[in-house]
Image (cartoon, rainbow, N blue to C red; front, side):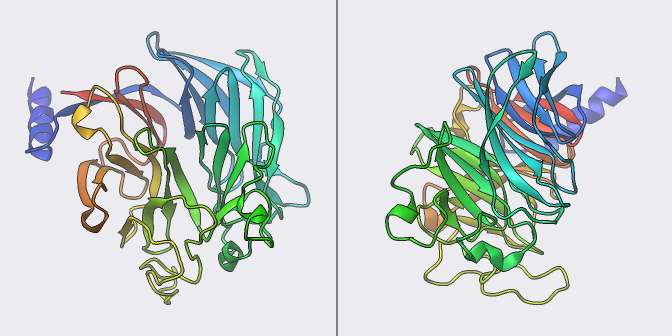
Length: 352
């Protein structure tokens, strides 16, 4: 009785003048990374070690799908994001390319509950010997697949569009290259898949159901995380720009922003370690419709951004340090309840 009372008091005080909600753990997992709804009752989940799982939310049952991916769990890498649409599955992952080198790769396969036979659509060039900054999130818009490719800790490689690391790519859902990508317009030196350059380690990517734009979150160094819009043929500036942060040694990187580079919508200094994002649309928290929901690892928080007026972006911390490091966020396609992947668990958030 006392224990229940204490929980209620903490909940009430931490959400004064805000939307009341409950957070409930559904089940335990092992370093989950990405998630995607198959239907109203089932969720596909990746685990960094290379496992794909189906979670039955009603029965709280877990099944495992076999696959043929050449995944290497290495440093920050492993099996990363996953998307499901029209009985097709796309994954981003760290691929073992031999000679101690790896790449952020993307594969596609027809959905099967027993085993998925994937075929690569994309391999980041060049493969690199580094355990850092793979990205990688994906988002679908119409017949296009957008994906983030981290710069693998190589800094200025993000300014070299003859290489994939440090970029946002856009390909068709079948892997073909769009004829109106920047290379075929006015960026002849860019690789054909590249849509935008100058990012560091983007681990959030989403399509807004309202304005149909693609939005992104990106890890800065020591400070300089940000949320912004993906813009065709543009450059977010890493590592010419430091976005307000510094190197981990404390040395300066560059200005927060300057003309000629894409300006983010929101910056965080110090870092909160931005991870997955979504533009909320649903019934459960209908007062949040159109707002960006930003999750974080280091800060262990869920933040709500009202960015309708770009000169006056309003931020609210919904909760902090309640479920640990937050890796992914999904909104239920029918009821609008929110699901989170933490370091070792699946959680649900619903109205209190």
